[in-house]
Image (cartoon, rainbow, N blue to C red):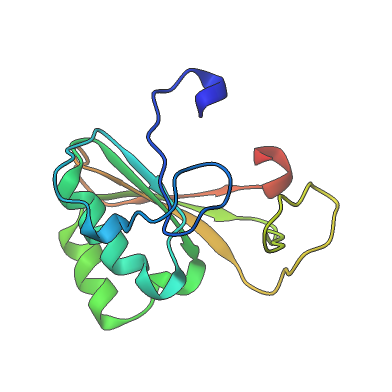
Length: 137
């Protein structure tokens, strides 16, 4: 995002080389921001989404497993929040702890993922679309 000229504030609970560590996103209360893009711990995706929606005025993009669409509590979240789009990866996203995985490299590919994009200005039902990991990388 920085390379594209965006003004970005990054943080993480752990130091990973791209942002200051020791910052718990769920405890951040003073900042009001336009947008949030995050890859939260899977078990905390809903609290991250709810908190991001509280502190933003624009869009929130959550990277999560596709099965995040399931369950009663999330159904209530999706019914009450301005979910605008779900971008489903048409191929499995490779992961390797601690390093970037380039297209064509290995990495676990056992789960399906999607970007869930909320937009405070959204009116109407969410749209569904597909993206490719290779094209996005």
